[in-house]
Image (tube, rainbow over the protein chains, first blue to last red):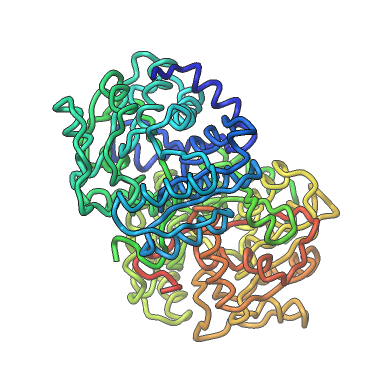
Length: 315
Length: 315
């Protein structure tokens, strides 16, 4: 299914009443350190503190009344779950969130605080899919995939649309990659608005399936059990996101766990904003000079700020 | 010595090339929780991550070339020290910073990173003053008091000037109080620009000398040894700041250590920005309903974001 910039424009008009046009921050200290001009798109200040609000609101508000009336369902223990719950509550429909029983309490609390109904399941991918299918059958709810959905990809693309509109003449835009919804949406929006821009995916070395998938031209599964602390970057590319990334993304760079933690802490210390590990991966690519940014204008999407403050990764 | 709004305007013109006009953040969640409309002036995003940059730049750039050429000296281990060091480096003059040998390494590093020359001293107030006087005699440097100085008070007042200019019709403005430089400057700027505004000082219960001073009409000394975690709120009011506060501040409210830590964590979790304990005291006054803000428009000065990320107060 083809996704165009027009889909992203339509998504943007649809979700504008509900999301923040997040600010773009700069840092003299990080510019000095890297030699580039860095522009940080602060989705940690987005609703639910993550870009996932964009795709979730676009999908939930794309549904017809008939589709919407029985609610929506997803399986996720992360920011997508919170985003779907909030979007559903905003539309006034139920949200059923399937998550493993052993999910961290902080994740359960987040979903509950946005009004989502939690359905517990076992720990495997199959357990989740079975539980979600059961909810669909029982309730008639519409399933919202976290990334392999045109409406989700178009919603995530609104973030780069704003960044490129607000920050002219970027040489690069960097985004983390997991399932690829954000990276695919970013690539469509950024290359449409500024054709010479290079779109860079950023991934943990310990979860480098997207890097290998792009290199070899085939979708590799995610590494299990997960080895990275980036809890938002543990899935594989989707059948919809992969071809977009093949066509429009210049490169995927990987960074070590140590580099990710260092980058996260640097942003906290220097910029005084809270970002989560899955978000720090894109910062790490720049700070570790995996991508040379000397003299370049570089957009970095800060994807989210949901961190358990009792368990910081440098402690 | 009389300080007027004109002094603050002059200070603002003088320091504008060097400081950030920091953003004013809002939070739907905290508005819902308090019933008020809260406007957070983010001085944690200021140079040196603290409002202290304003007073330091104003003072350093107020000096004649003859006064400036031998540099500046202060005794402080906190944000004022870093601010004086940066302002001096920006003007191209030496900064001598007197601090106790047992100051945390993170504070020494901060001053050094801004180019300040550290002179170690003993732990008492007398030790600091003696050491600073020796530096003055030896180098001819100009002493910059952290708060009891017209130029410092005028500089700190530029923060509330920006806030009131950017946020019309505030009912209240809240700022922490220690030596009173920020609170006095805030009171002059805010009541000049918006005469019906009420200016509120915020103080830890465990360091409530300003509260008692205002109540009894006399300056009480700071509580020693300090009992509060707010390392920026451990000094007493000054002879210049006290009469301004008496004349223009409506009330000083105090909050417990637990409330301060809770407020700090809430801002981190909800707003995804990093604030230090001394800053959280003003947030705590609102969240604990020490000041009832239902239906009111409330400006809160977030004074700084310098925190040792290895020693968080909730751990």
